Image 1: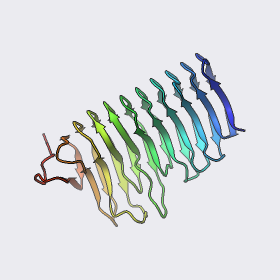
Image 2: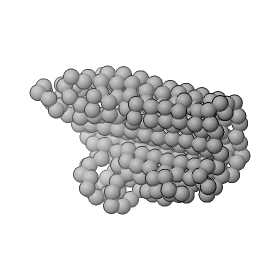
Image 3: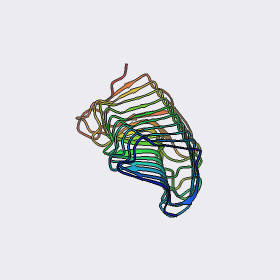
Image 4: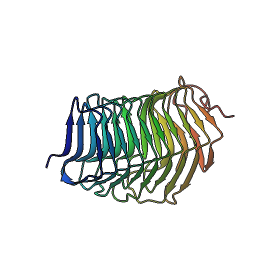
Amino acid sequence: NQYGIELDEGSDFNVFSFNNLSNNRWGFYIDGGDNNNITFNKIITNSGSARGVELLTRADSNNISFNYIWIDSSEGDGIRILDSLYNKLFLNLIDLVDGDAFDGINLQNANFTHVYNNNISNFQSNGIDSAVGSSHNIVSGNLLNSSFYGGGQAGPAITVSGINLTIELNNITMNDGDGITLSGVNSSIIQFNLILIYNGTASGASSFNGILLTGVSNNNTFLNNTIVGNKSTDPIIELRDDTLDAYINYMIFNNTFGEIRWLDNGTGSYLRNLTTN
C-alpha cells in the first residue's frame, strides 16, 4: 500500500493511537493537517523511499510521540517534516534496520520544531538532519547510536543549519562518522552534549570530528560538551572550526580527551577565532 493513514488539509484535531501499520510506503502521510496527535503507534515500512511519518505543506502544531518506527528499506526516513511549523517530536523509538536508510528524523524548512528524548539507532546517513532552511529549533535529550560498519561511513549523528538553534543534552555514540556537524549555523548554543566515537572500520576517512563547525557560521557558543574519542586507527578531532576569520564563535569549558583543532583558513593568526573562558 502507498499510505497506512493519509490526512489532507483541513484534517485537524485528530488522535491516532495504538495502530499497527505495516507493509506501507508511508505509515502516516499528513499534507496540511494541524493539531493532530500521533501516539503509541507501531509503524513498519519496507517499500522503496519509505517514511514512517511525513508532515508537509504547513502541517503545523502536531504531536508525534511514543511511536515505534521500523524502517526496513533503502532511502527511507523515520520522520520527515517539510515546510511546517511548531511540531513536537518526542519519545519515539526509530530503528533504521536496513542500513541503507537515510535519516532518523529529517527537517526541511521546518521551523520552531522541538525534537526531544527520541531514541534513534542504526542510521547510515544522519540521526537527526535539520540542514535545509530550518531555524528556531530545539534538539534536546536524544539518544543516537550508530553501529554502522562497512565500506563507507555513517553521516553525522546530528546535522543542522539555521539560526537560533539549541542543541543540548544529546547522547551520541558513533562507530564511524562525526558527532555533530553545524554548517551555516548562527546565534545558536550547543551545550551539555555527550559524544562518544569508538573504533570503526570506515574506509576513505582519515579522521572523525566530535563537533565540526563549517560554512558561514557565526556567534555560536559551545558550552560544557563532553567529547571522547577511542579510535585506534585514525585520530579523533574533538572540536573542529573550519569557518573563516570573519566568523567569531565561542568555546566555554568543553571537556575533551584528545585534540581540539581551531583552524584559521584566512590570513590571521592560527587561533584568531578561538575564545576560551
